[in-house]
Image (tube, rainbow, N blue to C red; front, side, top):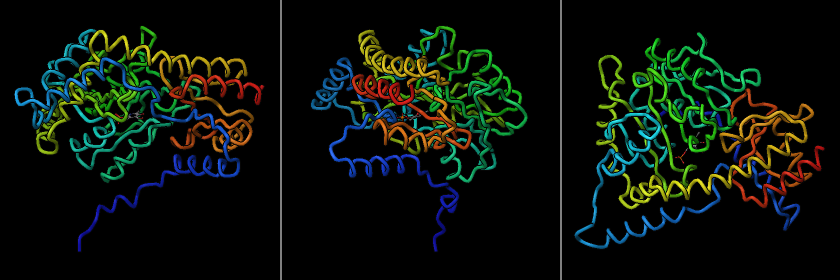
Length: 394
Ligand code: PLP
C-alpha cells in the first residue's frame, strides 16, 4: 500500500482565517444587511494599473499572430523580464547578472518550492510572529523548525543568537504581520551570522515597495556579504496588484555555494525539471510595472494604501495605543487594549463596531494579545473604521 507523506499529519490546523470567516458569517446571519469594515484583508483592492493592462492586451494580440506567437517560455523566466528586474535592482546600486533573477508565479509558490534545495536534515528558523506558510512548508517537508519569538522590547526585530540554531533562516522585511522593517545594522548581524554558520537566509521582500524611509534596505543584497548567504524572494502581488495575476521573482547569486554545490545551478536544474515557465502574457504585463509609467502608476496605488495606514495610525495615536508598522509596510500591529487576547479584541470590534481585523495569535504564540490591521481596504471603509475605533475606545 502506498505510504502518503505522513508529515501532513504533523501540520497544526490553522483556524485563523477559517475562524474569522465563520465568526463574520455568523454575525451577518444574525444581523442581515449590516456593513462590515474589513480591515483584516491581505489581498489588494485596487485594480491593475493602465500600463500593465495595456501591456497585457498587447501580449494577447501577440499570441494571436504566427510571427509574434510564443509557446513554452524559458523555465527560469523570459530574458526580457530577467533583464528588466536586474535593471530595477541596479537602480538601487545592486549589481545582478540577468541569470541570477528567476521569474516565478509568485512568492508563495516559490517559498514552498525553494525548499527542494535543502536537505531534510537542515533545520529552519522562523522569527515569530510570522507568515504561516514558512512553518507549514517545512513541516510538510519533514523538516525541524526552530521558533524565535520577537516582542515589543526588540520592536519585533530580534537579533540572532545561539538559540537560532538552524540552517535555513527566514527573514521577512517589511514584515507580515508586524509591519516592522530591519534597518541596515540589524540586518547585517543576520547576514554575518548566516555566513559564519554557513546557513542560508530566505529573505522575503514581498512588501519592499512600501518602504519610504531612505535608510531602510529594500533588498538583502544591499548588505555586505549577502551574496554568499542569501536568496531573495519577491512578488508583484502587493507592489502592483498581481495577487490574481501571479508573478514573482527570486534572486540567487552565483556565489551562493554549500558543500561545493552552487544553489544557483541547482535551482536552474530544479526549474527546468519542474516548470515550463510563466505565461508570456503575464511576463509582458509584469515588465510594464518596471517602466517609468508603470512605476508612477503603481506608486499612486501604493500611496492610497499608505494613506489608509496613516488614517489608522492617527486613530491609534489619538487613543494612545501602542503599535508598530504602518509607515513602511501595509500592516499595523497593535497591542490589544485592556489586556484582551487577539480573539477577544476581534469579537469586541466585530460586535460593537463591525470592524474586522486579524488576531495576532494566528501568527504564532507570541502574537497573543496583539492585533493586525491591513491598509488594503477601501479609503472610505478605513476612514469609517478609524472613526468607529476612536468612538469605541476613546
Ligand atoms: N510573503 C508574504 C510575507 C506575504 O504576506 C505573502 C502574501 O500575503 C506572500 C509572501 C505571497 O505572495 P504571492 O501572492 O506572491 O504568492
